[in-house]
Image (cartoon, rainbow, N blue to C red; front, side):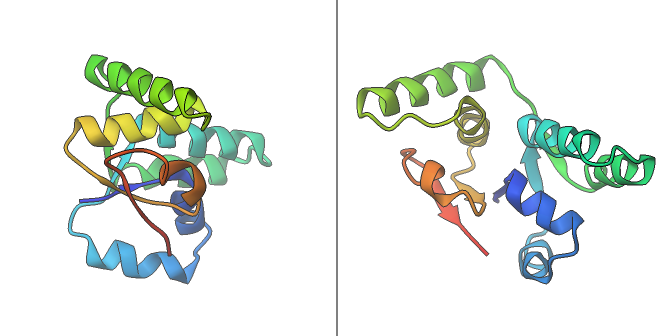
Amino acid sequence: MKVLDTTFLIDLLNGDKRTLKITEDNEQLLTTQINMYEVIRGAFLGDASKPEILKAKELFGDIIVLQLDDNSVIKAAEIFTDLTKQGNIIADNDCLIAAIALSNGIGSIVTKNTEHFKRIKGIKVETY
């Protein structure tokens, strides 16, 4: 199983053909509440047209959305602290996404944002 990051989800919504191999190969598509927030926020920030917002919302009807829970919050804090001590600060959202994945036993993230995620212990980064 793999968690689909925001960059992938946006490209999927925009019909990027490179996303098809991933969606066709996976029997179970997963993402996180953080990614859902980022995609829907982007739809509102764009032209905020109802079709774009509805399209973004519909996407999440076909994907399992992993929840942010107490274990994920604690794991995210651990990830952030470890990286900060190494001088490798990354965005809180990326820490939360990775933590949700790891807390659910998932060690792979599909993204174009390879630089941040590859710094996180236990995460395998896949790009497309």
